[in-house]
Amino acid sequence: MTASWSFWQGKTALVTGASAGIGLQIARALAARGLNLILTARREDRLAVLARSLEAEGCQVSVIPADLSRVEDVARLAEAALAHPGGVDVLINNAGLGWYGYYSDMPLAVLNELMAVNVYAPVLLTRLLLPPMIQRRCGRIINISSISAAIPSQGIVLYGASKAFLDSFTTSLHRELRGNGVSVCEVRPGPVTSEFYARSASREGGRRVPAERFAVSAERVAARAVRLLPYPRRVTNVPALLGAVPWLELTFGWLIDRLGPLLLRRSHPSKTLPE
Ligand SMILES: NC(=O)c1ccc[n+]([C@@H]2O[C@H](COP(=O)([O-])OP(=O)(O)OC[C@H]3O[C@@H](n4cnc5c(N)ncnc54)[C@H](OP(=O)(O)O)[C@@H]3O)[C@@H](O)[C@H]2O)c1
Image (cartoon, rainbow, N blue to C red; front, side):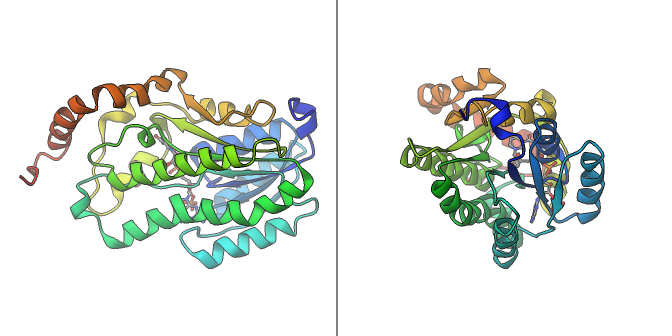
């Protein structure tokens, strides 16, 4: 029954990080499938523009601005979402941020923000929104992770670790909930065209990385994420070829140990690695 698009029409999805990039495209794709939306991010003006355009197409949209690095905002968001008529059937944990550079240079404020938004916010939102889904025996929680979860890399130490956490969290919950009508799934994109690189690089001390040259579109990631509603699976890689990456890490980790640091040196020409 849940393996049909019509089942999801009129259901409600909460999308975090809906003001830009992948989250914005997921919101559009969900609206096109007939879901009602709760949109959140910090930039309220952008959410309002998106809401107006989706409402013009017949979608019911609520906007709840929140800074997910603040635990009180996360709790307030969950409370408001749960008070929404019909509750929340789909949670898309998409909001996230990156930072490039040597971990020893990472400003503590960015460290705290990254852990709060990439790790603590999805964990807390999931904990607060999951019980009613289990009660109704219907729900989807879709975590937007990253291929960097599967191939720990120099220069994105904490970002990769935060996504690896999400990877493990998703896998365990997916298994725990099997047979309950609720599926917890993970989307692992490679590089995606969005504001992500520019914003990550603009944080103090960060640099751009070459990966964005190979980026796929945010629309493509969104289409794969939304497909998990009728066809849930624990993990989906975008592009699918990236499914080979965990195998690469297992098989050639020893080689990556040697070559990876050289790549980081090239993107940080002013620095040498500590011996
Ligand atoms: N782009 C890539 O190459 C790539 C690859 C793999 C995985 N991902 C993951 O995909 C997700 C979306 O990334 P994207 O590429 O769409 O990046 P993006 O264009 O920079 O969008 C990030 C979104 O997260 C929101 N956000 C950031 N900090 C927030 C905070 N403190 N509170 C609330 N919302 C916050 C932003 O909204 P406001 O700034 O308005 O708050 C924005 O809507 C992230 O989890 C990212 O790690 C991206």
